[in-house]
Length: 69
Image 1: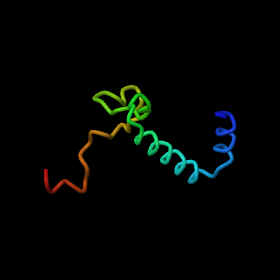
Image 2 (image 1 turned 30 degrees about the horizontal axis):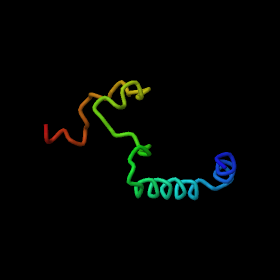
Image 3 (image 1 turned 45 degrees about the horizontal axis):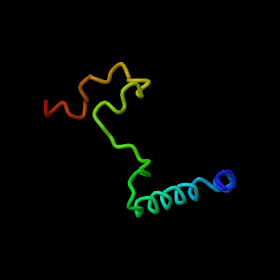
Image 4 (image 1 turned 90 degrees about the vertical axis):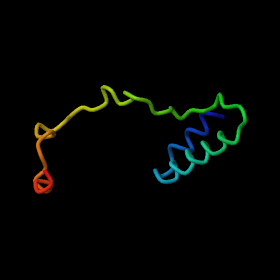
């Protein structure tokens, strides 16, 4: 059954895939047994090693805010 669901999911446009995903999360949230909680909780340092590029001028003052500094 899981394979046939994945085949259906893969043939859907991206917007329909998002709706199906949201609906699946809704159904899981109605379940009293929270062991199916697949959404990861955010935590401090959760994006560590995920940022691949920071512009060299990232820490430079922004010209538009010069009058406030």
